[in-house]
Length: 465
Image (cartoon, rainbow, N blue to C red; front, side, top):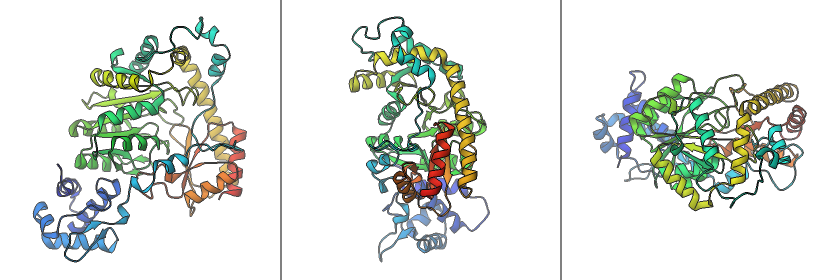
C-alpha cells in the first residue's frame, strides 16, 4: 500500500530541478497530487517530523511548505492534530452523476438548435440503409433469433481489418463488439480497476467515463492539461508517482479536440509500460481529422504497454448507430465478451449486419462527414467573430466540437440561460475532473448545418452571454 509520503517522495524526486526553494517544490508537489485527485479532500498528511524523516528533508523545509499550504487554504489544521487537505481539494465527488449527465443530455422539449450533445445526424449512407435494409443486406433483416451475443463474425473481421490499417496487430479473438463506445468503456473500466484504485483521466474529459469509474469504485487522478492539450511532461511525472491501474485518454480529446503529438503518445505509452498502467485509448473521434493528424494508436507503438483500444461508428455515421468495439489481449477480450453477453445478450444482430455493410463504404462516408464538419466549423467561427468576438476559441485539430471560453462567465449560469433561449449547450463543469477545469467554458459541437450553427451562435450571443 503506497502511503502519502511515498507519493510525495516520487513527485518530489521528479520535480527537483535546483530552481526555487525546496519548501515551495514540496508545497507544489502536494498541490499537484491534490488537484489531480490522487490525494483527496480530508486526507491526513504526515506530521512535520514524520514527513521530514521520510523525505530526508529538514523539518524547517516541511514546516515552511505546510505554512505556505495553510496560507493558500489547501490545509485544514487543528491544534495537536496532523493537517488534512481542505475543501480546495474536492474532486469528482463534488458533482453527482445525475447532475453531470443532466448537463449534456438533451431535454424533453425540442430545442430551437440543439447543441448540448456532440452526436451527429445520420450520414446519407445511413439514411439509405434504413430506408431499404432488405436491399442493402440482400436478405430479410429478420433472419434467425436476432441475437449475435458474441459478435457477428463478419463484422468482427471487418473491424480486425480496420484495426490492422491503423497499425494494430489485431486478430478476431482480441475484438469485442459492443453497444457503442460507452459500453466498451464501462466494460473495460469495471473489469480493470478495483475499489479505491486511482484511474488517470485528462483533467477535463468525456463525462461518460465518470459512470464507469464510479461503478468500479475507483478514484479519478487528473492529468494536467494546457491550452494545447494534455501536458505530457507533467502527466508522465504524475503517472510515475501515482502508478494508477488505468489511464483513459481520448483522441481527438473530448471536449477540447486537441490531440497528442507522436512523441507525446510514445512518451505516455513508454511510461505506462514502466508503471504497469493499462492505457484505455478512446479513438471514437480519431477519424475526424480536420486541421491535424490524430495521434497514433497506443497499441501500434510497440512499447509493451497494456492497451485497450475503443472505437465505433457513432461519430462518423450516426449517433443512433450503437455499434462499437474494443481491442485488447485475447484473455481479457474473452472475459469481456462473456460479461457483455450476460448483460444484454449481445448487440442487435440486425444492427451489426447493417454496421458490417456500412463499413464497406467507410472511407466515402468519412470524407463526406469531414467535409460537412469543415463547412459547419467555418460558419461557426464566422458567426463567433460577428456576434461574439469576445469568446475565445482555438481551431480544433479534429473532432466535432469547439471548447469555448467566455471571459468572466459562470459556465452553469451561461448554460441555464442558453437552455431557456432554446439553444442548450453543455457547460464546462460537466467535463471537469477537479473543480475549476471547465470554468467559464462550454462545449460547442458543430455537427449541424452551417445555417443552424450561425443561428445557434447568434442566439447564444444575444441571450445567454
